[in-house]
Length: 368
Image 1 (cartoon, rainbow, N blue to C red):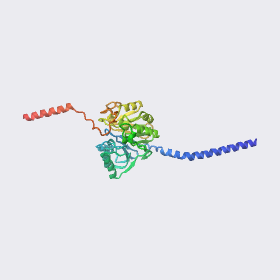
Image 2 (tube, rainbow, N blue to C red; image 1 turned 135 degrees about the horizontal axis):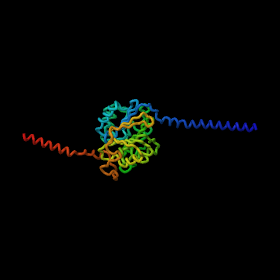
Image 3 (cartoon, rainbow, N blue to C red; image 1 turned 90 degrees about the vertical axis):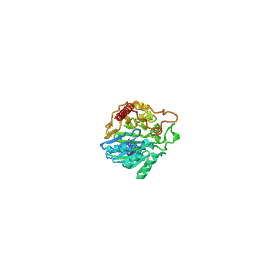
Image 4 (cartoon, rainbow, N blue to C red; image 1 turned 90 degrees about the horizontal axis):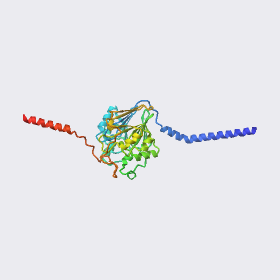
């Protein structure tokens, strides 16, 4: 009997040793994963206000981010000539510098006013896809960065930029190898497909900024395990029918979508197809063409973010715009720059009245 007890005791001791060894080995192998996972978590929010301003720059993108500590980021700068509007917005929101200027890609509706902004305020770093574009506008953008001696960073997945106070910007795309022209759908566009995509985290609040990324970019991010879920989505490519795929919207679980587009655009942005997908996903929509400048504020707590548009929409937010021509043609979608802005509506009645008044005045003068 005593011998049996001794045998049981030895077995228990052996099991304890095995368990201890397993625990040590497990910790040895799991600790690097745990450390990496912990490092990837955003810092806790300070509880002070974060402000995100989706500027009204017409048919283009420009988004200002102001952290609780006063650090700032600007994502894109709109079309050429929009520099004054962007710089005025910086002043209105008490911003006198840009810590991180993210240029999502080289199309003029995103970097058109970048040189004006860089020359008009103090920019510390530029984060860019570094996918070149053969335009004068792109050359001026690069020349201005070089002339100012600004830190010029190529975007890579996993890069993190701490804006202080618990605000973190993480790069999700472009994912190498970069898309080439022969990999894209008919009419696809290399700068768009390789847009810089970032997510902004602040406590319980999150925002996905997608540039002009389209469905192929969305699919690649999801297949590579990128965290695309967020409270708010800046809709890709101004609401193009080739972005915001059904699977992407489902994976993102977005509550709000913001579309940056112009009322006079000829590209059919936002597409009715995209608006229908957003409505089916129960996502609330704001549009700069209808709401003007859109301000998002939060202290990083659960469901405490607030969205304040400059004005109430006077048109149906769920009604898409018609393109000048069918963008499903074989030659591809309406690419930026191949069409002039839409003509302004003519005021025939007021013009006729003005001419009539002028004619009457001339008659009176000649009769004197």
